Length: 556
Image (cartoon, rainbow, N blue to C red; front, side, top):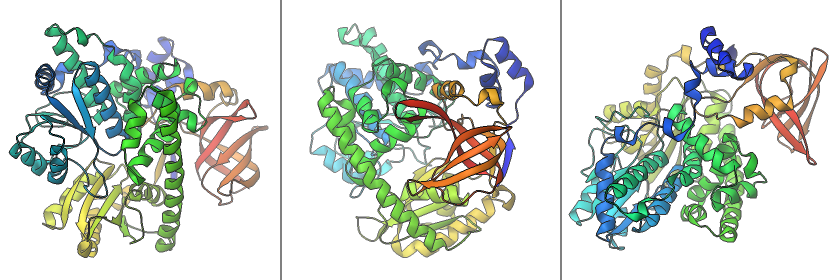
């Protein structure tokens, strides 16, 4: 591992300083390629115009016509936090606009991902006139064909990368589809649905519908949750959406379900940060889709009854604890299986692994090995394996799977995803063949020089910056994928270290004669007497007292 300091243009830092940005924030923002204070202006008017999103007007007209004709709408949701929040945004807005709308979320263990023909058959039992996919559908060629055969109109809202063939839907809204000039290709599924609701409101206003005067800004807390939880890059537009949502959350105007999710974890909504959305609320919401049925998560987000929201959140919290227990056991199995350092990215399979947790396992192994990893579990649907992969920045995982699929026709039954995360289905009999083909593709696409873990930091902090006020200031800002939370680097003497909570190290560090309380989470490896550490500033609360804490993540 090598720790390096992020570089920045001094002229950018000076421009931010001249605009009144805090000196430390000016340095951090300049290192994240922010060149002017205008890029930090988070307000609704600064969002990209809905008109730039291809087919958005068509989709809005399709919905407005359906509402006017009192047609039955059915949202086909996805079983992760992005899909759940996108469904909740659609349900809340469409009901407010007077639509007759319900939702259907597939059982991931029986029906798999996306609008499959089997899911269309299930949806048809509810006699919908229009299916609206959220966070899925761009690859559902066969499912849309089946819907067309049944006379059901399909409106696809998605953000995933399209394949060679687009489904024959009545309308597709996806910033990543061919011919779409929307500047933010990083829009999450919930962001796409939010933009569609903005366009629908504009269309209803144009038609003089009195129900069009609803405040869609009230949905931005859900947009922020889905955007952060789906780990999409936080470009300026996504940061703006997250900012609007955090403002609502901190001001006490969030929806009951999101407040309940945070309170179930002992977090105060008024002090919520992007970290809380990504690592507290998001995993609890995702736990429903991983272990049970995302219906529980969606119900948590669409109810206005605080007691019902609290009950749902408590159930989600219990599922999340169960998920962590399963994940810990799987990780222990996987590490024993590895038996040492692996020198190339790999795929792993254990017949006892849980299908809903292999994605998290792949993420944990990827972090430990700093290599792309795909983990497989047996599908509930017979002799198939469901795989979930996570990658490092140097390798585009979906493109890698595409290469394998082209070289080995028929090996991968279906796949999809992003640069850093992807899912796939193969026959169990083809596992060894896939593992070998995946290794060959990695050898070609991931040069040895790219396999060394390089951790970017934001350099050292002065003694006067290692304070509770600095930690609070940083927590209040928006950080996430592509706009990383600050990670500082400095040399410390380790004066004391002891195990706490069976899995962590509590540390006392010294620098320039000053002592600092620190933690090393998820690791029991003893630290050397002196080290160069990469750490984050955090606010530690104990017995009602708050203090600054250094969370050591890497060290040389």
